[in-house]
Image 1 (cartoon, rainbow, N blue to C red):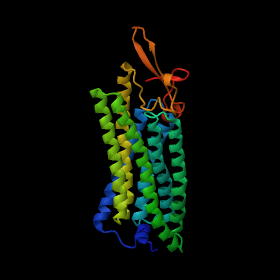
Image 2 (tube, rainbow, N blue to C red):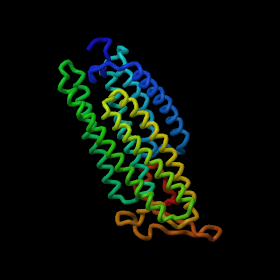
Image 3 (cartoon, rainbow, N blue to C red):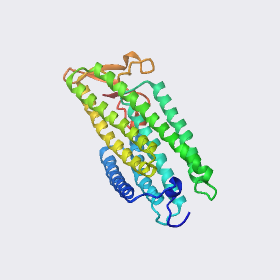
Image 4 (cartoon, one colour):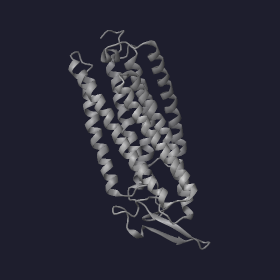
Length: 313
């Protein structure tokens, strides 16, 4: 590979035209700006820097900058060693993609208390991480070797497989979230909850559309555009997390005057016992609902339990 040729040109077999270079540079600028904004939002929004939800969102937000920078080095012939750019891409890719799945899984604890389902989804995320990250990493590094033609052809196949695999994984978790929030619509038929939960459904549908867009660009044969559009799509997903978090806080505040559980599955076969939702008298004589928390919620979302096994809605 000549010094004037970028690694992505060797991979795709053709030079990028000028409009594509402009679009890629624009995507990179959006990614860098979004990452800085997301880091600031994360540090100012959360009062406690604990739990899987905070740390997965924070690390995934930080990963956008090295991911965009690595692909800038990989796409443009700037004289940076290809192994350096690939290392930046691979490490940040782990944090961004699997990190987003962990964000979705952590957030799912707020509406689902079926422990077996949550444990199954976590195992699925870990298995997919090993099954898709490791072969892609080996093939990508191998494609940069002097005799990397076989690795490059294998990487092209694996790139399609892992892209579909991670998209399906996120769709599964988001679909479960949509299903649970739709059940909450029936539990709380008042207009305020209906509006909030409908907005939550709309936000999750946007996330699904972004996954479809990334896959569509990849299968259109626009590899360079896809790899730079992907962090843009993930930055939008991370920003939507704050909108979802705000809506869930609204539901929790309104639920203080309701005896309905926050989770539609909190009384399911895998959830807490049927007496998990109780009430206690307040000073004014009113009944305040108390919800038994999933034992994992404090670990996953960073929500501390004020009582021994209970937390106020």
